[in-house]
Every structure is written in structure tokens, then in C-alpha cells.
Image 1: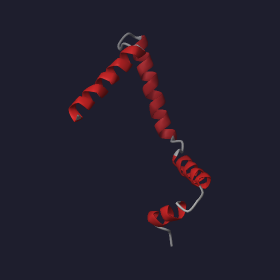
Image 2 (image 1 turned 30 degrees about the vertical axis):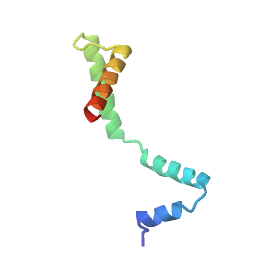
Image 3 (image 1 turned 180 degrees about the vertical axis):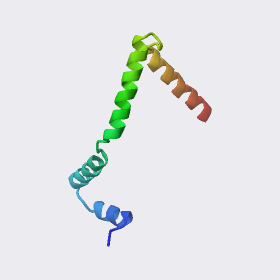
Image 4 (image 1 turned 90 degrees about the vertical axis):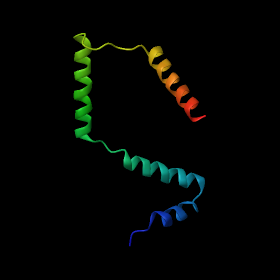
Length: 82
């Protein structure tokens, strides 16, 4: 019989901090599996974007502009929530 998540959590809380860190790392590593199909899609997308940039069909944005845009978005979001 497979233990429930609740039972596993109860057992994990009994571990030392070092053992819990090892457990978390192993669980996270088990989720980080390569996906060849997804990698191929991203490679194709990146190549398409680079080709379009080189043909002058799209423009690049500078890092300071991108950061400013997202800081502004974050600030606007805080204003709406606050």
C-alpha cells in the first residue's frame, strides 16, 4: 500500500533538518527530467526568433528597458492591490 502524502509529511517532519534538505533535493531532482520534445520545440522557437531578428522583422529590447517595464508592472500591481 502506498503511503499518503499526509503520512509522508508526518514522517518527513521527524527527520533532522539535514535529512529533510536531502529529501527535498531528491524530490526536486526527480521532477527535473529532460523532455526531448519540449527541448526541440524551444530550440526551433529560438532559431526562428533569431532568424527573424537577423532579417529585421523583430527588434531587440535593451535590458534596462525590460527591467523598467517589469518594475513598472510590479508597481502598478501593488497599487491595485494596496
